[in-house]
Length: 452
Image (tube, one colour):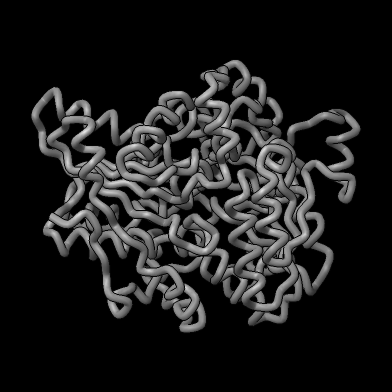
């Protein structure tokens, strides 16, 4: 069997998949941060172009991808699906491991799958500038790339710890024309409030979101873009899973286990939702598992309740597994996946029992990332090493039992700009960290109490 499974450009899917109409129960509504009532399109209009708002609440199972977006997708799509023969051999496992490689995009990750349509719809509605936040820098890079294609200004608030640790991500964003600020900053009231109490704050995605939202909301020609969590973002990413379905069909394979790293949920949802559709239709029966960091365990330790999407409480309230909107990740955590909440759709699926979840420590993840690099030749971003570690766990179980399982994951980006993290790992400086349950309980005291 060939290592690389490809699709012809003509076989690239031309529709995104919206899982919401196929679910046995609809997800809970999004609430206004002030009134706690369900939001309408007009409530979201200061932040998002109307086309995206309509996608956010769409009841259509499929949404056509605009030709202008498809034309840009063709720069790197269809992305390759590989069988990890060398990793399988090193593990001496009967399992067959496949990975969908999204690091071939210009930004080096899966994020342009949604940054391109978000920039396109914004430009269509006359927007001149987009603001956003970024943690590890993959989303900021992707949005800077997309804005450059549509003549939009891009302003990014990057979590301070990553801003300092990953200067090349900042340079990449600036090369595409973006303006980049460390967050918290003194440019917004939200940032200044944090700095007043915590001058040395390492920042968080929640803080950076507050700053980006504050900069966008009052201005009619500025909109805000989010790289994960929201329904329309996960929908844009389903091109990953739709392609993977077609590619596996070419070699007459179906996954027994699908694993995806989960932070905000876009990579996991993008790969898994089309397969979950097929499972709900009775066409296959894979186990679908979310894999998150033990240092930011929103699914496995967070509570399922309404919480703000940002630290300052300006963003809408969504029902999700949350560690609390004022969560600040411990700076020892070298990878991404550091948002305080899980995507409402992924949280809803977890509550319905349609997906599983596990948390893995970072040293085991980097062990797996190095093993992957030394067998398959690709240095993974720290985020997908969580899914690689889960795949290795399952492959080792197959070695013990003799099962010939098919394991599928998404390698959502390369680690070329994450070498400081690998340096810390290789020098023995990384330590494992369990986010304490007591911290979750304490944070829940500051989360709004919303009656169902």
